[in-house]
Image (cartoon, rainbow, N blue to C red; front, side, top):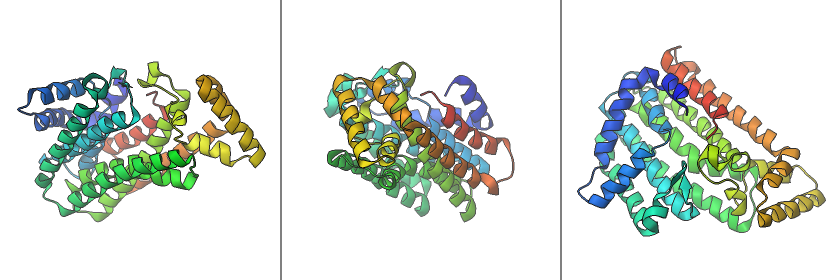
Length: 326
């Protein structure tokens, strides 16, 4: 997010967001010096913090931000950060958000242990929520995050992915955490099943749109704008929606021809040529269309809430995702 987007979106929870950041930092504090060094590095390059923002807004639209809201937002961000650290090890990534990854600086062994430490801090603090519903959502989400990543690796090995399986995968690996974020934010402030379910669905649809946008960045983005290398997915045989649509919408002979061109581009590292192939064959437009559909579905879930600046911020997040450049 650029500063203008941030100011507009967090305006209803500005003080709450500042309080969250203070509590989040203290929750990660350790007596082990190297842990604090790595955590300090992470917090200097903390990114958009979209999930805690969503959590706090979900609490606010259902009532008031409270201690459980701060704990919920912190737990979600811990799960997210731990997942990113592990992902960078698995993906052998050197750069994230234009900065060297933890694994590049401190190597894989310590990176995995730091990810485990952050995840364990999340587990330790879960009991503070004092809600079986929230605990059930979080534990289920932790399982789905891993499940989604493993499904993607499995399909990359087999070099096959259908659109249906793609949606299952991104629902687990990305949308599940967005959904949990909004749900436990709501649970912290209300007992209304209708409101909790609406925000849970809002988060899920937003998460689906968010992942499609990230998959588009891998094709049309650049490291200068996105802060990480592009062309990674196709090089690792991780077929995303633009590729899936392109390959499924042509005849078998045309598919064979396209795969030959794609493999040639990958070998020569000609990402711009690959981008052109996908664009000409409708892959980008189709992915953008589906992203817009999921965004509209997310906004529809907010219809049960009265108009307010908090509701406007939640709507604004869906619009931000459609137009973001990183």
